[in-house]
Length: 313
Image (cartoon, helix red, strand yellow):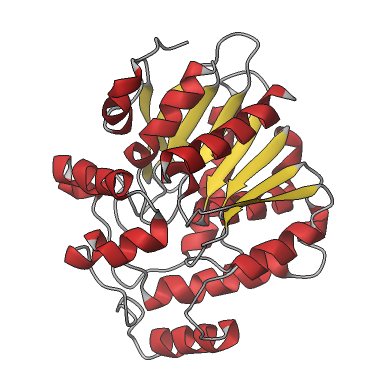
């Protein structure tokens, strides 16, 4: 187990990774190199396979890693292909979600090698891919899943999902798949704006940590969602919601979502939880999208709830 830090070292926990990480590149069947980090569990403790969200990178969730390491949990995490330090998709290419699911199937084997009961955890797009992974037959590998604001649908500020999907398909067909829709764009000032902060978290200091990491390594910067990503994400959400798909996930699944969620479709997430054979919804008061990077009281509530679930394995 990692040594404790004094309480006033919260900034260190947010801007450094726990010691003793194993850093390795996992190479997919097509030769794509995926950056991974892992920590072995204390004997007898479970391990977590943590999947981050769209445009995220490993370091963004360092504070949670410190917490989980203090509990003695093993941890395996990585940068999705196309983001973080795992390269970028060439312009004009697609098939993101199929590629991510194929990568996840291979990476899950690496995570299982850590030992101990394995828990699948995911944030936002990572939560969505976790559910599709489980529905595709991976559930027996895990003891439970813990998902934070999983993407069951896209919150498009009043635009109906079918209209958003149609618009995205039309833009891709017109050759503008790599272009940005309104309110999206390349990494820049908008990415660090107060408006984006309020959508993601009520904690301005934790929000600023993302920018700090990117200043340290500008290669981690990632822009907004393209029309192609929206088209493929909409299709993947439809695949997840199809008849019999959530019902096939025979695993305890705990879904945490903030009552101030504005990035993913909270109504769709609630509907999906109701269809899971062993699903539980935890609505977190005063929380926005990034539950693991929220204000300290909110974050502590979520992490304590996860510890309770881990302790029941």
